[in-house]
Length: 165
Image (tube, rainbow, N blue to C red; front, side, top):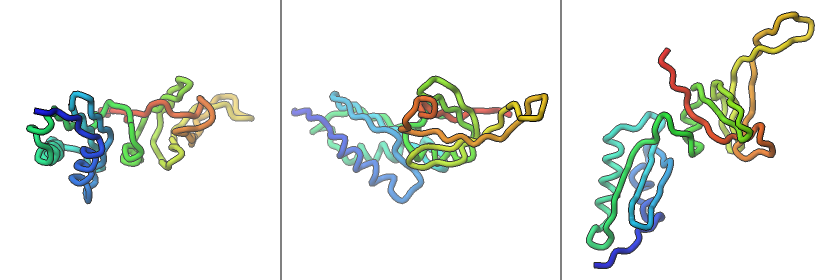
């Protein structure tokens, strides 16, 4: 029996076929040389176990274990995992996120905007204002970039802030 390596393109095509016309999107696909396939999916409406099973069954039904033995894991991108694709940012508009910049600074705020360049976070900060003795709370809108020019405003990781208020 010949064991070949399963191509990432083949698996990608099967995933896209299954999630087309839904609000699901691919977060990550890894096909290792030993044919271990790892698929992370997400959706604007959330991902349930049945969504993972559906994608898994679709991939399995399209591959022949006699030709290519494989191991398959399909799961949702975890709540605590950092964002990996733009759709995860778009899904989180209006939610509180924590961004760590390439410089290592933490910025927490409400994700207000997302585009191909980056994001806009809204938050409040105490600042000195001219003519005032005490620092006052000032609304801030801060632009952070996926691939900007400086480490201070470049996004290293972004995660959703999990709160039980």
